[in-house]
Length: 407
Image (tube, rainbow, N blue to C red; front, side, top):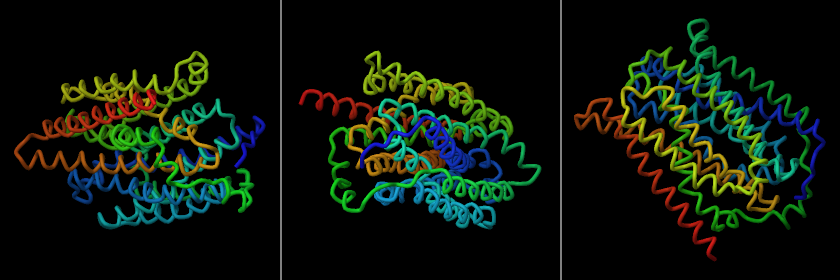
């Protein structure tokens, strides 16, 4: 499909409509961190149960990424996003009415399926409607919106809980999703693709997965990126409560400031990226230099133990911001006809990885405690295992790309 660069006013309107949808998607993604003390108490959840529940969102999300790539390339964001959000409404209402862990888990999967197009739809559209030099800025600013959703999932949700309860919060979110569908149908452009041209130029999913650069990013997407999201959207909260001894309100306040900082960081990052690129610094160089700093900050969290709080997690997530460069870099390495398939393939890695890491960290915590370790030490062990996996993923990425550079 050929690029169709839109006028600035139209592009801004499209961005804000998509941003609204992605904001709600982010709110639903991260809300389990704030609700974790309440849900743990009400449903008698273990750490593994909590990780599995939070991961249900990512399981549903990940399961749709491959079919979503085909649907987006063929039908475009307008039809796909609005259709999938109907499933999100069903999942959100089901979560509000759930009476058991299994009910909560199935609802989370449905929510993940329903909002699975809220980032990939926009990024596929941007690949066609925005100039190439603004792809990384659009990606960074969508991640700014992600952080905004995370912000609202913390202290605002915590303050609203005593007023209306967690079930009514999900009911209100379902109403907001309905308005997103209306705005999407009204303002997002239709996908102008003829079937014959689509079939001729679309390319296959195999073209994406055989690509050497894409393959080099697989461990980064699965473990580094997925694990960072798992910590930001779940395990930072329980660490502050179970390890550092924070109250639920103090933990929610800490998460609020973590995500507020990331909101500002993504705005600045998106603004300066095109300028950095013009100076000759490429995404690969930024990732090679930046990721070791994030590993050092994770080491500090592990060593600090009971003293690790919001500042430590803010620094870790902030220094991991270079991971966000991988997704637009993957998209730009393919033709526009493969925009949907390449973006959703990498997103599949992130969300499968997030599911694995959210559940896996919980399982390691439970296993360590069953072997007689204290809760604090169990958390430190689980984070140390995650750190080792990240380091090996980084070394694989560096080695593979050095080989590509020499070919």
